[in-house]
Amino acid sequence: MSTEYAIETIGLVKRYPTSASRERGAFFHGGFAGHGRVVSFGGILGALRGMKGPFIEALRGVDLKIKRGEIFGVLGPNGAGKSTLIKILCTLVIHDEGEAYVHGFDVKKEPDEVLRNLQAVLPESRGFTWRLTGKQNLEFYALLYGLREKEAKERISYLLELTRLKERADDGYQRYSTGMQRKLLLCRALLRNTPTLLFDEPTVGLDPTSAAEFRSLLHDKLAREEGKTILLSTHNLYEAQGICDRIVILDRGKITVCDTPDNIRYMMFDEKVFNITFIDAVFGDMQVRMMNELEEMSGVHGATPEVDPERNFHGISIRVNKNMDLGSILEIIMKSGLKIRMINTKEPTLEDAFMAITGQQHEQTGEVRGYRRGA
Figure 1: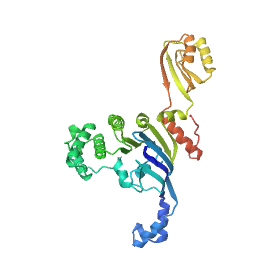
Figure 2 (figure 1 turned 45 degrees about the vertical axis):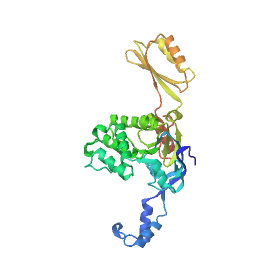
Figure 3 (figure 1 turned 135 degrees about the vertical axis):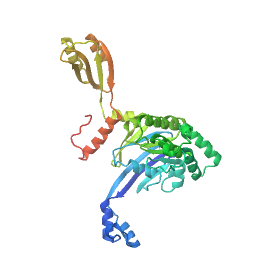
Figure 4 (figure 1 turned 90 degrees about the horizontal axis):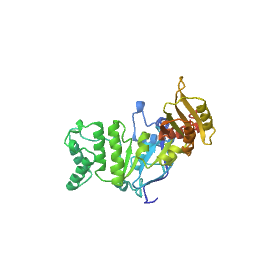
């Protein structure tokens, strides 16, 4: 464990008993009557003793080191263990094996210290009173958190300005849109000014404009200006690619890859695609020779012309090695007398890499068939 990291986990394991084990425990120990009714306290203890498996391993030896001030994304399919990881870090769930630290404090042994340094922002957590205004709701929570009156007033004013809710601060909560409610949730999380924030699906349910504003708030204000550490779990790969410094992909409780979004994008793919469009070009013998010359070049994996029935040569799509220079390709094209209108490069997205990585993992266990790397 090192104080250099805001969050660190070592061999983290979390198991949940399956429904079959719960039913077996209840049946054999006689703690429940028909329809799940508890008939005795001894029966409860007996049922709990009977819950000895089988288990589902939500996390299987997770090792993470998240630097202070970093925006760190956790990606993975449904059931990968993302929410379990977040709940362990914010002390809502106790892990079975391994270690977890927040700013050097053990989440199991020092939960109070952990919660002084960390605040979770979960989409299912509401707790706002509909009859109060947005500002009054924040004042209520500031009182619960033990903030002094002057400190609370200054902090609330700053947060309402930060989230652009100041003009609507005196409106009733029931009049807030989904995006405004999410911003008020963020204001509440920031009342205590903790150095680390955990988000589970921070922009789910928001319209594109509100989601972009929220991402900008996390990236530009909280992480870059205030230096907060942000851990977010998301299914939004565009979001992760745009704002995360590093990401980890969880699959069935294990880490499959941990790196920057750009490195992960190129990790699974050995090629990129150039799409070149031409001005008033006709596909003739010279262009056929050009195509042959391109396909014989080292580093070119394939070249496909776009030609209509009238022999108009609209463009060409060229698959090349990801490190290949475009200059040698353009030299061959210019020799054939073609005029270029536009050049676009199609590069792998984080979604491409995500599908390739998780698909490959499932193929190895026989869960997905017909998958081929790079397909």
